[in-house]
Length: 408
Image (cartoon, rainbow, N blue to C red; front, side, top):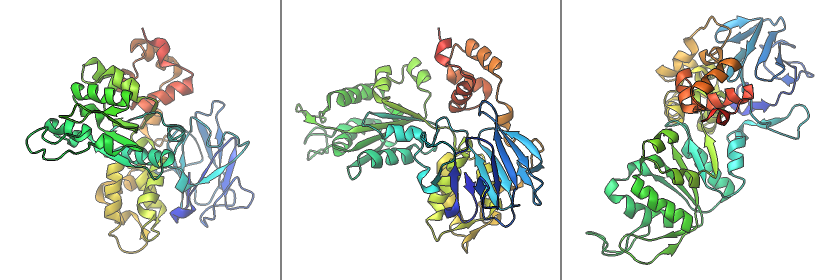
């Protein structure tokens, strides 16, 4: 991801080999940043494509990683590189953006939100299960999937955690007149309201196992029976469910039904924390801010946003965007950021690795040892390595390891 203000000029480049960045016309990545040298830096892949070598080509203004000027450095996934007023974000993709491309391909920043996993989930009408921490953007992705597969059809979002336990049955399945005190007229439930469209069940792990059983029956049969009624109604919906639970642990504890998990998991999209999705930070900043008066970020401000850890994930980014919008003028600088996000600009790291998690990436031998000890349990392995499940899956793929081979 190459970002040079204004954000509308940002673009993604798929790198297949050694590439030069600079101002000259024949550079592999050409950016019209006057602070760049004609040939500013090169990016070279490792043989396994799991790491890249950054080399400054004697530029006047330098190449910077994590607040440190470097002449040469080895970087890995999610690295932020600063050259002049341009910010680069390196994301090592698990699949090609353009499988048919032979060399370099580009696409606009606006189209980046639909990543390959979400695109796969939008390819048919099988149920989708979204996994990830609170605030990671699961609702946003559910809306994208619904627009891609059933445009113009109903999209009914249900926050299962916000429904009082005594009202869950009535809210989901509807009720007949006289079914309970106060039910003067019949009312369709949220499931029936989504007929012909998409039903998004957010925080589905908060439903009781009894309600989960009824939901499973409804999804499998394609029929819903309102509370207090003996008649069933046909209902056709595409279900997208989301949870921040570790489902293996919840199933083992008896709080989530295994059969419901398998019924919902036609496609599984696992979202990492926003801090591990630097490209998404840029894309979402564009969505939230670029649409308002065409705001322009300074390179310092954009780098601060990308380097901030975002413990509240996408929800926190949205709140920060709302605060930034009250700042006067079109240019957004570090001083215009909310106080917590300004810290991303002030931190200077002496290590050449831009983030601690990059330096902590275990060797293949270590992964084999941990997979054996954890018997292929990714959740346990992630806890031991103090990282997210998605990062562990990525490391295993890089190392050519399959966790299921270590399960007993």
